[in-house]
Image (tube, rainbow, N blue to C red; front, side, top):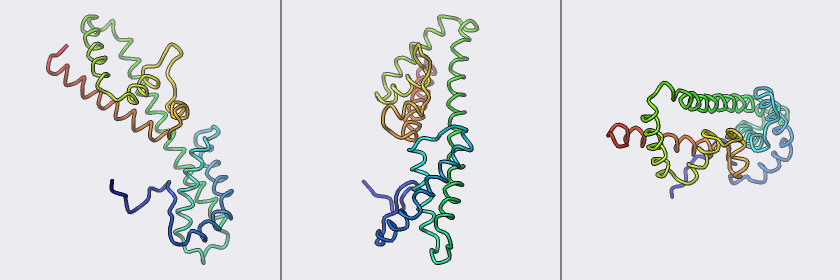
Length: 197
């Protein structure tokens, strides 16, 4: 497996000067978390998860570390401002993802309520194809689609809650859901296009 040269923005950048990085982080860590928390909360209007706060803090620290430290008068102040801006960015991304998730769920619910507009036999045939196509997905993809899109008698589970329950990141679950829906759509389209019922 190839290791990328550049770390992702939310990963620690470890260099030869780890002692200097650690010392700076001890000095600005609280400011980073505080700025990240405030920035995210300001956009999403709710208490952010510690996972989101920590990812923003790491990203912000990496950005702070790349700055010329000799020109920084207040490292904690600058760390707070950077983390606040990155927190606002993360909050906006979370809102976009929530809106998209709701739109996908609403679209699926709308199509399920339009059965009366379709011939019931055609609808049943299409649903049978969907079920067969779901068998070709990975277990994880089936689970995330089941919980967050199809739902249970209790309704659908927010993707964020699903990720927390699994103990994985929101981003990993979002990618898993997207890949699952893409694979399912491709399979259904191929099956219906070839006339296979």
